[in-house]
Image (cartoon, rainbow, N blue to C red; front, side, top):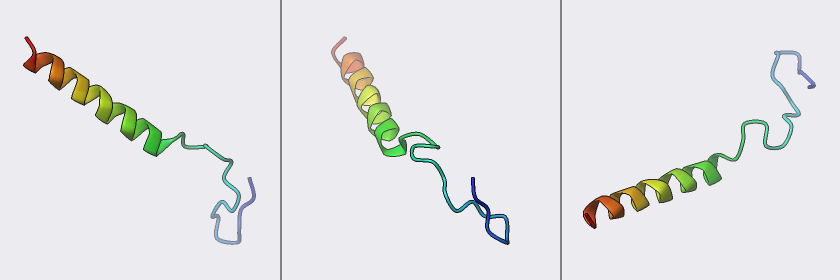
Length: 41
């Protein structure tokens, strides 16, 4: 990692923090499936 004079990281590796949007979509879809399954009982 390369730091600037203030300690900020200038070159974060790709996907260092994961795929936030993909994770959010997956969690939302799973919640919707659970809710639909509960309503079908």
